[in-house]
Image: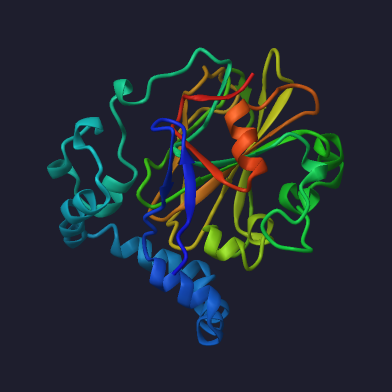
Length: 293
């Protein structure tokens, strides 16, 4: 099987992704029988809820230690001891010690640990993942007028794997609106799935929030649901000012993505983000490190 490569900002090396459930993903999205099961069962909310319930049982704690060892996680970063979690799901959306994720002085930072792609002009995103398929911003936002305003803005797609820290944060200081949910199915948003159909990003269940900032206009923040994501939880208070890198919420079990969209001309994306995105390579960076200036 071909590997999924990304560039790690923190190690300055190209690395291979350890894909949780890789064999299952490749079967579902790349075989005829798998695709039948995808549309009949896997994409449906009931499948993800069922799996989420399994990961919330006391018996699921037996998965925690092997998961930590297999993927090389560092328990010293956890805010709580691994033995304190009452289910795998509790461990999955664990909090980290503040010292585990230093916050860069840059005014705009990555909202989550993950593999990121940056596009300085949304209107120029053409066939990035799938030949012949362009990015459908009106469908993503569910609002044609809003999409027109941001059509030439900048966009950052941040993909969280199951092995990642799964809380997401505000990229900048500002005043957040309520988060609106746009219903949809729950396809995977891994490169394996997106290489088959990019539209999963704008058809999946997703949420959208408007962050009013002093210097960067209104930033749109979206969370994208995915297969086996039990739910998307918001932990902030709408209308109450937030500081840069303050927690916004968390995903229950499963990998997923966030999307950050800026008005035209308001920011310049980080140089290494644009460099690697231009090569169609994701940049791994942690929450709090520089995303834009």
